[in-house]
Image (cartoon, rainbow, N blue to C red; front, top):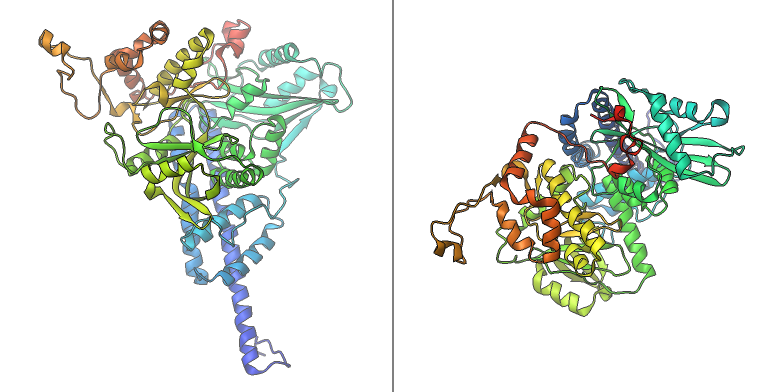
Length: 605
């Protein structure tokens, strides 16, 4: 008996049509399976990278973290290309057949119903179809423009968080159990002592959980969050109607054991920990949406888009950012205008006053002092993604063909964009298509901040400015253009660098002392009497263009006079080349237990 299906009421032509439809549906279903397998492979690759981060933490192999971070950034595009190749090979994908893609999407949606990561799967489908059709999701009719499958209460293995009950064994003993359950191969030097400090800090901060209600418990995310030289344990104390979020950084001490460095309780400290001016975390998890849900509960002011990005799911963060932007545009009516601050020579910056981000477009023609091209600028932004940002480099979301409502642009901004960046914009119907841009968190430009700063604020940001330069240097980054206008002040008062066109690896620079002038006339000349090659940096020159304001000059020389000497920079280069990895903790030094409670046995490695 043949496998041919016979429909007795149909003629031969109709039989052929039904067979073609059946074959097409089978191909569409197979294409959907290949797509879902692609995102699953990507996720498993990330899980393997997270497991390696745990091993690096246990063994102290800090030098391997940098290459691993750079490799992780390539995973998504690698799986994307691999999946498209499989679609071509196995189902001879019809790239421009929207009806066929509509059927693929139908089958794909069905496959996602019981999937643990449907939000990642939707984003992956969007990436594939826009790559295959060589389009973007500007008004694309077939992408997932909003979530189709709910991510609420997806079961995870292991569970998203573990619950502990202090009424059974006592609060301190429960804390000891919590940290032991992470199962790190490297032992703690004195976990009893460290958990005692945690209890002491909690008692000083809050008393809501001292009288234990029936629901008293501690909920802790099942995986630690790995970044640089620390593992962060994240949870909350629940008691009655009160919840106390906490984060405990676990680091290595000088004895070679593990120690609890502090406990972070303030919402501002938690926000700084998850700031995208730092490297992305590596987390061994099963259901990302469950972790994001937990984090949103303890940091209600943090955007889900940024939480996904902080966990390393950059494409999902970008998807949610775009959806949030579209939603905000629908709910507001103010106009895009030029962002406050000094105009840059490379980028033109605009923003929506009611929105917390700025949009940066590369200009067609750069200023006279900029000897670079568009591709170099893009490479610098890529470099920022690949390095340890140590809390001092602003992260950016990169967009191509971003559609924004034309009627939301102030006339003077539109005119300026057409004048300085005509190649990067196009008017299509009611939209202004921004062909390429970067989107960053809005900050107050440091030069603007200085104009209105009180003496205390001035002291804080001048110190922060120099610290930013120092910390970037030991992380092998030279900011290049150190003008105050190229730095911003965040809502937490932190100084961050955000102008990248002259960014360089510190080890690629040559720091030199200015030679003595050959005669008095040379010293008085407006032109330098010494030759400079590409890559040469003369730190003594910083004083001329940075310290014109007497108030700023006094504070800078008080805290950062070393930055004006080549010896400081050469010493940083030596430390980088020697393989030294310095941990810049995302919290104030005064919060660390060995500072706070004066126990010298707690000195870290």
